[in-house]
Length: 275
Image 1: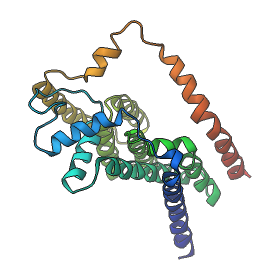
Image 2: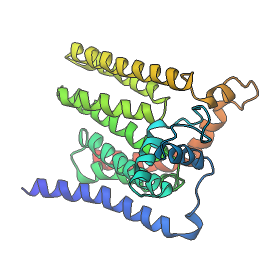
Image 3: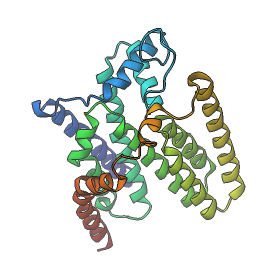
């Protein structure tokens, strides 16, 4: 009974504290801005909610001028329910922040018995200023990241328990991540290979991966039939451009802004847990 109470208190802490910080951050005048790219998604969502389909201009042919299909669909659903696009985006990112915290807590619980070993990784990630900023920019970044973290946590639970529900849940959440950002398929494939290598029930993994692949193929067929192309417009504009800056620049910039601040807390958490 006491252990159960402690667990609920830990869960409350890793959910309530980041949401409270997010609300406080949202009220600060200097943090009340929305990235201009977010309005691309909102325009598609408005047209979709009004029954015009996934179009940029009403009456035009459908165009895939976005890379966040599920995010747009959910914002359109919010619009149908009377929720403004920006507010719906903030709600989805708040959900993503919660998913990140819960996923890290679940993963840490597999290795650390001490409470702070389970809690600190979650708080270190969700209270990171960059996480709070991205949750308020109107983009899908934190929502998508939450889905990825949740998928990884479910995969790790399956590895630890061999419970088939964990495997199915992983496949579902990973597929939702793929619908949110197409590059998620790389993460999904990597983890399916990992599960296949570590699982004692490889047939279950193969069958689940097959169903995942069929669902993905059906989605690609729909993209081809609806838009006339599988990949979004941005792919043909950016990837085929020989003058684009090397990706290494963005990796270094991200490491300086996000990885470096959190690295100390991760090392500190591991050190405490090993004491």
